Length: 272
Image (tube, rainbow, N blue to C red; front, side):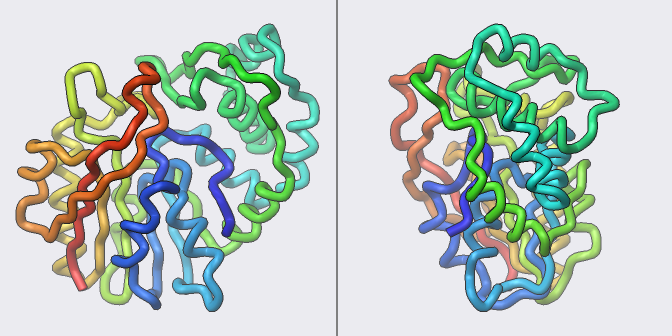
């Protein structure tokens, strides 16, 4: 199975067994508007025959989008660029502080993968100015470059359009025979668990409401939709008119190691 090339908060590798049964066997378009680690996409892209005719991936995080574009277009250049990085604290902070404006996609991809593999707990978080601000991680010998995984991801991404922007950029033209998987920043399970800072601007209550409206529109257009979110009273209220399934999944990213155990997740299904 092709696997994600970055560790991403809320990554869905451990939830695949609860998601895949709701995915159509055949579809025209596979769309993932909050791609993150894109675990479901990579899982389905490895199927033979392939389930979808085309794929649309989108994310609000410009660095992540640049990374996927580079891996798709010239994976060998990304692998070569990663050769300049090593697990070193001074190099980490110098790389973290570099401004990416004007960088090539290849350079941005290598930077993101290096930071992702060596930062604290693999967490990607930005401040109000959109600057990555996670501290250096403590590992024995992290694997910064995995050429086989990167090349497998490149083959999968060859069939995908990759966009930067709002989730509606990936869904505006979809309808019958199309499938959308939404994995948005979660509705917070507490005041201190607000996982919305993957891109400048966050994803607030109004955005959550817009997402519900978009799911309704897609259902009317004949598309099938699956969404995952934290299983909370607030989330259940948001998606009360759709079919929901409560499942358990490990949550490996948390600043408190004692809170990285199983968590309840809500899988929402709408449309045909």
